[in-house]
Image 1 (cartoon, rainbow, N blue to C red):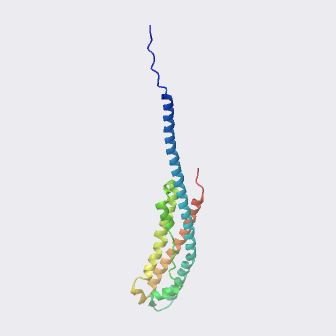
Image 2 (image 1 turned 180 degrees about the horizontal axis):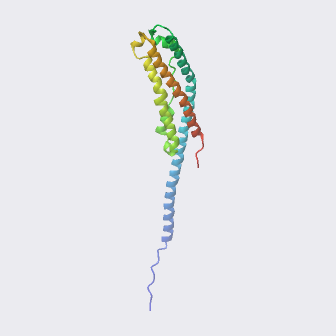
Image 3 (image 1 turned 120 degrees about the horizontal axis):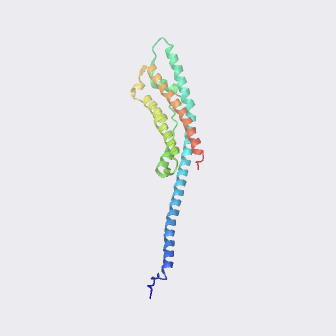
Length: 210
């Protein structure tokens, strides 16, 4: 009685299977290594970008500290001038621009804040690899800069150069009061922005958890 023999695999099959497995493994490993290299490159780009942002924020703090005392002094000088006018029995009239230029001996003196490093980081910094909370905090401080301090001093400049009427004689009290309010708000915003800048810097300098 004869039994059917089991067909044997070709002699080359084992070697081909091993070689095929190694090729697949090498391809997968290559993908993993390339992805790791891209992640490392993205993180380095993000860290370099945020390093430039930190330097920019430090420079902005210095710029604000260089002008905020002057802006507070302008508030006091306008206040003294208002008190002088109010103590007079006659309604004071004059050329508003001339009066203000005597009180603002350094002009408006805007802080000249920069946002180039932040805008560059958003475009080229690969910030999506960083923690969302850190990036959001930086975005908020630059919004405060744009819609607070920078917006307020632009409004003051627009008031001072509103047109020919500022060169004509008129009652001084309304314009002086309005200008004092503007500088009061500007100095307050500058103090707050300095404080917020510093909090953001502390967060950026802390090592990431994990």
